[in-house]
Length: 479
Ligand code: ADP
Image (tube, rainbow, N blue to C red; front, side, top):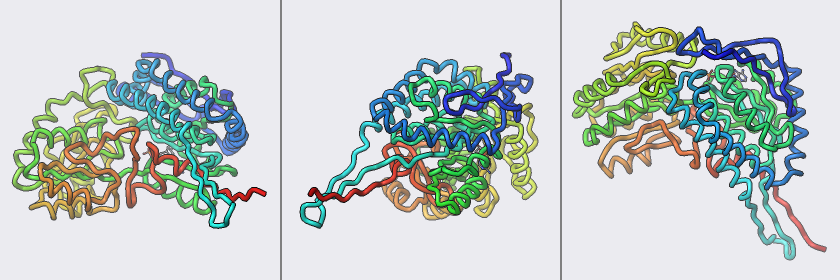
């Protein structure tokens, strides 16, 4: 057990205390009170936005080399502190130590990647149709970017919003999830020591109302949000009403097709990883496993055997594969959703509503013979819960895969080139995986979905520039 930390907001380069508004306990050991944090209100939010507005000009004056150096320094500091940060993430969110280390390294690499991108913000020059004149196109900062982040990737998601924002010359106001505020504060401290001007990144703490207070402030140019669909819908409506640029990542109910010709061991690995690792708390997790009849019984037996070898327990124990859910409210929500499925006549093969596990732990749960019109098809369950849909062949599998309004990630396990090609053309999702789990993406490639999963330009990789810059077209005629 370690001591309880009292967190502060961070505005204009200074820590700002406030009355305690929330706390977070270690979800694996609820007696371990990790943090107490303050709740931002509209006055404080307005101050943070004013501070960011002032920093936009300072960032421009500092120039690209200073920004690239600062981002690279943040990356290096994250690497140097990986053990400390991984332990904090595990203790705060229940993510296993291995995943927490991996995520911290990923955040470091994202800062490193965007340090390079800072120097590669290349424009274009055309001859004008008017003789003697030229047209230049450059990619200017958007201005003040509001970043709203969830708890499930408490350091990587903030990194993939804050790093490109800074790389392209924007200042940031950031509201992390209250469930992962200790990790957020640790990242904020590293950013504050990186040599960036005061106010380049401001952090407002608190639960949902703090995010709302931030967005109520005037003078925000763009909003990047990752979280639930309900909150994303609210944010999109507010942004449209105020003509703000907006980018939303809202998860999905992702499907993995397992064809009869698949490599069975690999299909089992993709399924177990996608559905149950990280306790199913990844927006790219596999919820729907669409299996051809010919392989279904053998496949399910193998999945059951593989899951029974997984250890659920304290995420700081290196032997543990699956930690707890991040907070009691997540467990209550998932328990309600699973009970709803069981009340509708579905029986779990393992796991289920009658949970033997304490605290925030939740046993991996798998349903079989799920009908395509089940709630499981249409409603995201953000936990280690998945269902098997048995299908007669590829066309039926594809129809089931595309059978809901989401489209973040989709996968297929097959050795057939024909199925692979058809899947690549016809699966409705922003990220397609062939013989790989639906979850697990690279940090230098675009991330995002279609339909109800995402809105606005892609995040990450070179694609990030679209959201974080404003195109400026300059016509010029020398006289
Ligand atoms: P979850 O808690 O399941 O990740 P949410 O969409 O509730 O999903 O939360 C994602 C982020 O959005 C969190 O930082 C949360 O505090 C924030 N948030 C929640 N409600 C609002 C709101 N009305 N306006 C702005 N931000 C919000």
